[in-house]
Length: 417
Image 1 (cartoon, rainbow, N blue to C red):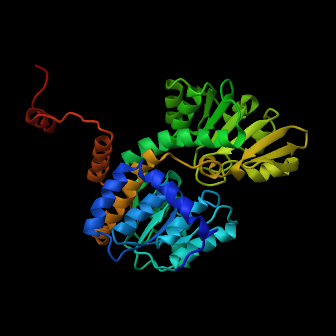
Image 2 (spheres, rainbow, N blue to C red):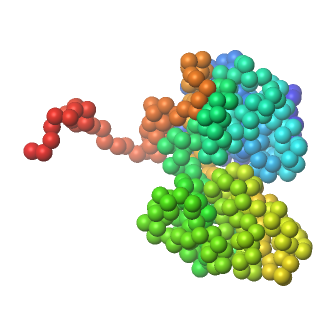
Image 3 (cartoon, one colour):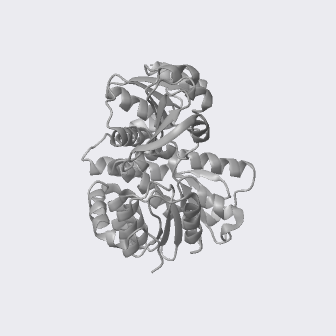
């Protein structure tokens, strides 16, 4: 079998981790049951670049149950759960992932996955699409792809606008059952989990700075407030800044926030959000973390150039001693702290995200040849079906409209009576 993992002997523990996840992902298990019978992905070669976690393992099992062959690389050098990678390799997936990859090893693994010749790609950050479009694989046989995260969607839309995107992409990230749950509740909880596991600090009473008030930043800000922190939001978008104000958060520029913050977390999808000018103003002992996809939001080069020493003081904590004697603490090498220092999003919320991935792959297999090389939203009927199925698995029932109400919302002639 073709795979490259840290230690295949870890497979047994990986099986247990995935069994736990399966017990908390009923929507995806329901989809798998249908896939097992219908085999809608028979003959499909999927090349996926995703965080190799126990939840991803359940998605891979579902795709394989549907008849697909899967080659899987990690979408972050530090996010792989080695036990899960080993278990998936044992089950027949071509896995190229281990925790602690160098930059060159990371891209080598993507290239190994691409050698399998994808007909569908699955991305978390658009690195597979980027590599394919850079001549690292055969694009001609690709029907379409999916993208899991905001950062990747931004990259892919930029490619489409420039006319260089060669096949259609479904933006799984933009589905309501992903965007409004995974990004908000998943990121909020798992980011705090990563910070707590890395540092074991008390959040209550701390000045907690969130850079970016998109869905991820909003979820994080609310969770941090719930644990007793005083939350400050920084933004460049007037509309998002206004939302943060109306939600009860203090909003200010990062230069001002740098003077008062105890903990800083970036969630913007942009680069150098925290940089040299900010480090100069920070209090001694400031903690820096990132929950955006790429490790560019906290400017590490600036931090290193301003420091006279660095030691790894805890597993996921590097202590930088600045030239004036102040200390700053960088978590998880500036990578996604929720995955590099913890386990990522809870299974229950990834249940909907990966249900979107599975059904989007089925949709591409059916209709990919009819789509133009653009970025598409998940079809509304898929999004709604996932929401309905999630409610059913939670034992929750909702109302349905009467025929009179259906007629009313489709009409225009009735007004004030």
